[in-house]
Image (cartoon, rainbow, N blue to C red):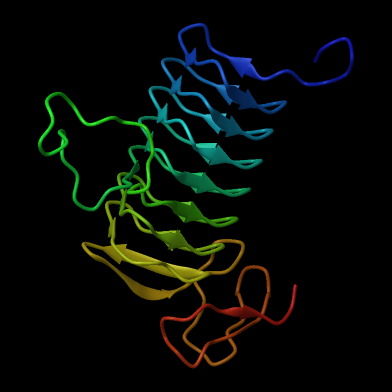
Length: 207
């Protein structure tokens, strides 16, 4: 903590944090992390070793990003998200290394073709999952390890597989919810209303 009482971020000596990167108080950036600028990482986050965060990425507060995660341009990660080791984001469905008719490599900067992905508050992304381009992962959803996500995930949705499919729903606390019209969490007793459309989002009816 600094003399002014502000908790300074902790950045490992081997991490590369480029100019234009904003890092909030209390955040830890571990060894061999590379963060391109401009980008923003909120307060009280953890970014694990050998993770890459591209420019034009926005990370909220209380986010845990484990080791060997690749976050490409155009990704927004809201508060309290858990991203397990080896998760890969993408932002282009039909990528090429070159621009047709031009010599040299295609630029890496985001452009009009970049597809943006948003990870909503409280979501969990399992280890080694791959996130397709231009998706929304709903609040408090859970993605199983090794999944390939090719479509939006509803709030509280539990998805896994290749391609990932909706297999159920989970509570805010992370427990799997029973298949009922108004499921109640066995762990924390929160209650929800199930949507008439299976692909829809659960609605909380009690805290």
